Image (cartoon, rainbow, N blue to C red; front, side, top):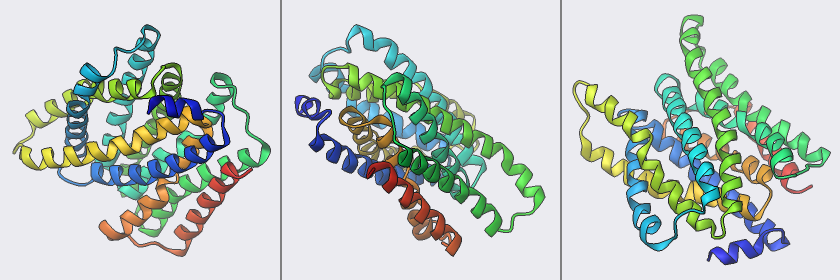
Length: 302
């Protein structure tokens, strides 16, 4: 299977598959983010998810795939650091702010940064229409946060309390750009992309879960473990689709295009917010979503 994906790199068939993989990743990530936001506590949710996908990946990393190549060790180390930073920042943002406020900010911050990094690291060049689409997509995603603030009629006192959540969300977006770039480099540098994925998921159980456990230990009363186990397993299965499909898309297609298309997850997230969080979708929001879709079209079909 790994050889098949490697053979598609740089081909027209590979570009088409990368498009679909990025869209699958977008949908899965919206579901994953909603799962992380719901429940008792975003920190505990994320910790449970990481433990679950680490345990599932363990037999594949330890017994099916080989050890990572020596030159990939530093890549996995950097990836580990950036992911822990992202997981903490996003959990902090979800804990303090509404899903429809912090999620657009976190997801809108990354695409332009990734596109700029891809110029220097992957020698990727976008045409003018793609840059316009990138700006349109990122700006429209970010605008959703402002629309949500205005429409909810939040007073200045409450808005002041939301500032930390906005800063955490921006930090999470920066970490998204950093880890996406590092992970794309790693999966391109390994002979079998599934080796990188197996070790990435396995190592994920040794970072943020420590933070989550320390938080759980100091809570009173302590949340029950059984709901966290269920949420963790469900989230882990979604995470495999969300992250693995994105990484495979960056392996066979352009990193900047795949990363930008993945952020159409905000469209799916809006639908989730409407159905599960009972949030309204106004004409302004629909307009912003339309701009996101147009930006994605300009990026992909240039």
